[in-house]
Structures are given as C-alpha cells and as structure tokens.
Length: 150
Length: 150
Image (cartoon, rainbow over all chains, first blue to last red; front, side):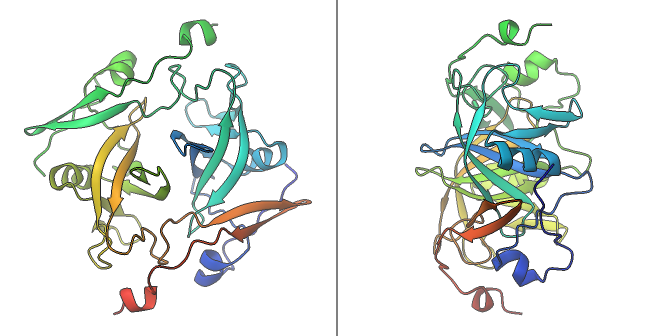
C-alpha cells in the first residue's frame, strides 16, 4: 500500500466535513462502506466494503478492489469473473465514513455474482401486513455456475 | 411496528437470493445499510441505516425513517429540517443485507445535513502518494445553523 490517508482523529468537525483532507473513518473492523454506481446512468450496481489496502489499490490502479467480509480477504473485483470495474471517480460523504465509487462496468456488464447488472434486482411490495419481493426483470448476463467453477 | 418480515435463518441460499420472501439480514446491531437515491436522476443522496422498526415505518408510511447511530434513536428524515423523503420504491440486494431506497426529496431538495442535495459533495484526487478532496460544487440549499437551532 503506497497511498497515505489523513488521520480523522485530530480533525475538527468542520475540517472533516468541509475540508480538503481525505480522512476516511474506518469502522471497528477497519472498513468503510462503498456504494458502487455506473458512471453515466448512476445505476446502483452493488454495495461493498473497503479496508485501507483495498481503498489504496483502487485509487492507485484505477480498478475497484474491495474487502470481502464473507471470505475475509482482499478482493479484486472481476478477478474470477472478468467483470472488472474501471474507476471514473471516487466520492466521500460528509462525515467520511462512506464512499461512492463511479465505475465503468467491463466484461458482460454484470456487477452481481448472480450474473445480473446490479445486485438490486428485487423490489419490496406491501400486501396488507406482509412484505414480499418482486423481480424487476434484470436479465442474467452470465451463468454463475459456469463463471465460478471449482 | 405492524409489518412482518421473513426470518432469513431457515432460507436456503437460493431462496434468499432468488425468492420472493423479504428476509432482511440485520447485522449484529440490528441494522441494514440503506443507500438513498433520487428517483429519476438516480443521484446518490445519502447512506444510512435502518433497524426493523425504521424499515417497517418507511414501508407503512411512505416516508423514509432511519436509525441514527450517532444519536441512537429512530429518525424520521426531515422531522427537524422539513426535508422529508417520499418513498418511490425500495429494493433489496442479492443477499438481503442492503437496501436501495428510491425517493422524491421534498423541501429544499437537500438530503445532507450540511444543506447540500447529496452527502457526496467531494471527490478524491491522487497527487503523487497523497490523496486530497475537491469540492464538486453542490450548492448549500439551506443554512444548517438556521435549520438545526437549539
């Protein structure tokens, strides 16, 4: 990891929210939440997390890297599937504990491991006191069984 | 709270990801992460969290409710500022631990407590080994000192 970030601890509230210091506030697990959106359409593709190393690699290489909480390892997006994400812009929120990553989704255009463009392919519908999900109709652009073999 | 959600525990992986049961996977603190976007433009407005009560109230009333982690209380968005968020659609991701909330931002159109439309008003720029922030130029639509008095 070659990039350095500012330490948020000594910053005032105003410096954190209105300043030019990039001081990501990693949580107790060393992670920040990342919303990845498609440049141009602004479609939300996925929600994931980065530790300092993933954040540094993302900015250095111009390719999205995350921290996989389920596999507990650094995750270069698309390393297995070929669905690399080219970084267009990285934004941080007011209190610097969340990031929006604007990307060009390469490959077949599928950010989700199910083969769909986006992970958000179901909407909630309220029927009386119950809530059910309805598919929004995003097509599967690849077959996960073929892509994630062995 | 009047709405009931499905329990994710007995669901198979396939039921969780491809089924019609709405089974939000709240974390150890009882929260799911929510990305709130503007209907139409898809602009990311903010990132926040909901507990089961906030999620239920959001779906029942059609107005965004969150759980404020900093204040440790239920938070009806816009209750103080007047910047209510009208729900257009609520989507859940593949493994049901994240939500995208599509809203009409009412009031002055400012989702951020700083008075801006979006909390993501700064982009990161790499200069050699250092990273700094640059304002993207979102105007302040209200003066926080006037809105959040006493």
